[in-house]
Length: 370
Image (tube, rainbow, N blue to C red; front, side):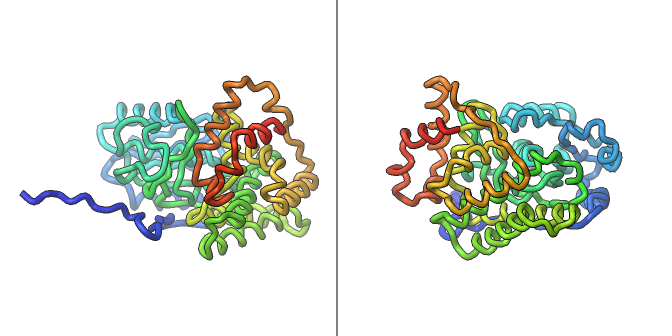
């Protein structure tokens, strides 16, 4: 018998990151979905479509999804951000209904739906609960084939190696080499009709990605090249008067892609760490949560916050205030614990001595401003 030697992780030394291997971009490209999936179908194993339930009564989108054989369409709510329990329930439903693994999972919606689709595809091939995989490089088995189709731009979920979930103990992503989509379809027309506030909050998620990446201690030429392009696109989209609506949709879709790539070899920072605390304790959605936090981070990102305030003024955006004013002591401590648990984010933002700066007292002071 030859003893099996445990292979070293592929991420020793320089990190060997996966990227989305196939992407289609262009107005109306959503209509190529059936053709793309046909090449990936395994016998009659189903494709499972996870779609934002905002589209449930919108035939203009749903009628363009072709279901064959025993394909399944699941409408998922995004009133709350995706939870590990929601992932587990969908996985259980699929395993109960089908004897074989699906041919693939297709997520159609915003960042929450894309993250949900990524998580479901992972958990169909890995045992246990999704909560057991919240963290970095904990996934051991390749996910089933999965496709991402964003209907709003900014989160970068379509290109990132994480799917952010709220679990019983923390809000944290499943960060792994198996998380990125196998295929992405970028159709700017799918973003038509997004409410202005939601468009702004999600677009600012992209802008904040760039600011945190470009000012982080992890910055390198790889991240910088993507981050600078996304940053410039965001400034053009949110401060220029020269773009048509069609041009703005296409540019924001590419800003989201580049913004997501900017953190592949880098990290986000203070705004995202504090926003995770808001999301875990108060259920604050990611886009608006980032905006609420970033609005108070002049000492960390002075130039970025200045531009952000100009963008808010130009688009007549009013952020909620006082959301942390009624927190109990226990809630505040949990919020601080959640934020401080995201150590790579703080290290990127503040360097090796981040614990000397991001003290519990400092975080409490910042949260109370919100």
